[in-house]
Length: 395
Ligand SMILES: Cc1ncc(COP(=O)(O)O)c(C=O)c1O
Image (tube, rainbow, N blue to C red; front, side):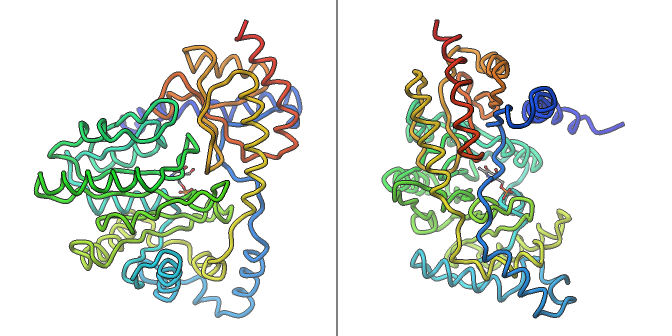
């Protein structure tokens, strides 16, 4: 018999799975081109051409046993050093390869950080709405995810609510900036406020409260908005990065964790991230793609494609009376559902072949998420369906 814990996790992951199955069912009936799947964050913008040429160069020029072989659990030292120098150049830091651990995407990076930090009974805070898998990652460390509501409407963190959520058991705060599911970018004043509060609380409780900065959307921002780099604001930070979105490589599972050389127990942390990568069974991040990304450090996907999608969808939804913070980054729009029950709203949307995710999946009922990382053409063809949905519910 399978584990009770896994069985329980099936129930909580059923919304996205059902949506996936529903998409396939509707595609069979109406044709894939007539199903408007806004449910999944799978990038549709092509990886930069350099990714392809880098793969070819590596396979043609390097020794195959070296390219596909094992290496240290935290990754190739030269790859880690190149990433450290790139971060130093971009953010004025002082990192070396010792401060970089290659990871199996952002998800893999988050897990090894939590394995490094958490003891059973510890608490980790995040702001709602939040990326659902955080709960499973924290749960797996026998720790507790504590939710601090953000300001409804703007979806910026509420410092008073954060302060109230901190207890002597708080070990870390997860920040996801730019944010999934809201598309909101936290600006410098908010980041400084959070850093000051955690510094004060760490002193008050006599132990460090860490920040885990989940950054897979760092480069996906619009209108020249700056995303503050957390390592510049708070020493006890783990910056978790991934190339899943910035290079459109989600299936290749490549990312890294960066931390400051000034963090307490820096040497042990380096060892722990490495051990956690091995113990969890990842062993190391994918070897070929470590070498690929090092050749692509100055590359990003065409962010303007997402911006065009955002403008089209956001403007249409606003014209229909939807309320949403204007997404400034990532490729998600998080809007108030037109009826209170977000699950019922998503069900009604399906009648018009619109596949959405209810806000309750992200700990925020009464809202829904639309991922606009699909083709512009498809969004354009979906507009009539959105209009019909609004007409039905705005009566
Ligand atoms: C907020 C957030 N964190 C982490 C991840 C996981 O990223 P990866 O695919 O690199 O593991 C995602 C993926 O959608 C995400 O949206």
